[in-house]
Length: 320
Image (cartoon, rainbow, N blue to C red; front, side, top):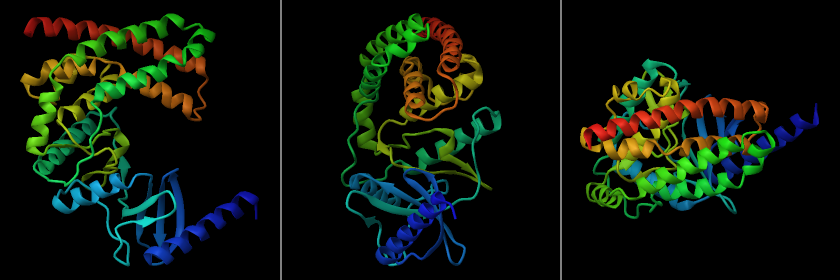
């Protein structure tokens, strides 16, 4: 037996012992999906997603949200066999949810983009009015984007060393300009309205959080927030656009927001926060793609994005 398999078996045995001791959950198999997510299987063949959380408030909010609402598209937490909502180690909180066999959506497919919209609308409709005693207060999205920009700026050397300094400068200048524009829009009023109406967003509408079985299900509610639903659609638009070749008219066909929200939606999605996010994710990960190749692809996409920004500004001038 190899040393790696021995270590894996030891980890599984420790996990199994912990889950049975604290939750009376008896597992036979454990397969890591991510550093904080493990697929576990019981001796009777039942499968669950075991997740490790660092903040109790995140777990508490989800439990209260799931308890106070019902939705056919949501995969909620369930209790451990001994009735506990979560298990506690020295620094973490563990939850379980049913494992849904299926495949994640692919935003490159028009059918999956439509399915995503339908599922997200169902979630928003069903979540409307759910009351939680102490909703987590999150920073306004553009303030988070500003912080992301500061992290991006600290990576300047990668662009310079690989001959992409002008791309770096252009991304920074465009982001700063668009953030300034977005910061002047009345988001506080929308936030207050969302609080009054108890509107909720998922917070992370990446394709891997939509699972296709016979139906489409939403998973991973760690970024669940009582916020204007337009926030989900700003992020979703940014995720759809590369698959639509940055065609604004094609994006509008999905009718994500009401016409009276177009200005806020278009100006917010025009902030290249997703470019910053994906770049920082690339640097922190273990992608096999050479950095020069990544930056070459980034530059090609950036040219398309600048054309999109130009078209978006032209459209806004026509209507506002």
